[in-house]
Image (cartoon, rainbow, N blue to C red; front, side, top):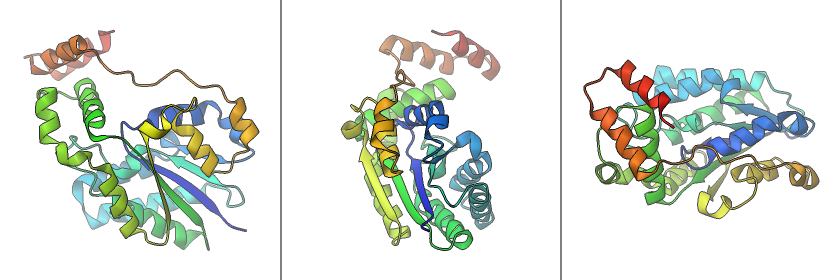
Length: 255
């Protein structure tokens, strides 16, 4: 019996939330065919990956392996499992002073090592969603506007983090770090027009029956962007003298 793992490990702002909402919404329908494991089901592993992306401490990498093993221990080896969380590549660049996803290859290799120690001969697919640099940088900036007190303009942010947008390079480095694992990369521009979005290709990788996939209804688009006027409002709040609590409260009240 071949034990199969499909691991959707990144990246942020490439349709991952839409994919995960679809997987969560139809978890019961998918259950006879694939075990769905999302961020809420593997909080320890996601936190360990984020922590290591900042610290680069071997001890924290050990926790990545430990938590990866715990996730696998909770799965049925007789059924394929589909794991999906962008946090498996670490924090988004721009958080915690990170400039890129350069910890992602090491995190991936650590998870693969843990899984291969626990299961005899798992068939592992690491799959990554990517996006063209400029739209990706613009989407990341909006996320930072919403979630942090970033004070840079959109243009300054795009210039400062230009090198972080080479997602294909990170995927290539994952391939180097995990040479015996199948690595799949899909650009959002190529798969985003599918009615089910990025979730469709993940379900196909998990060999979910085509007729079941066809019966799944698309969900409304997640994480809509901000208009220029809305971005200006968020930026003004971030640059204000208000406390963090006050800024957070006002952001929550925005449409």
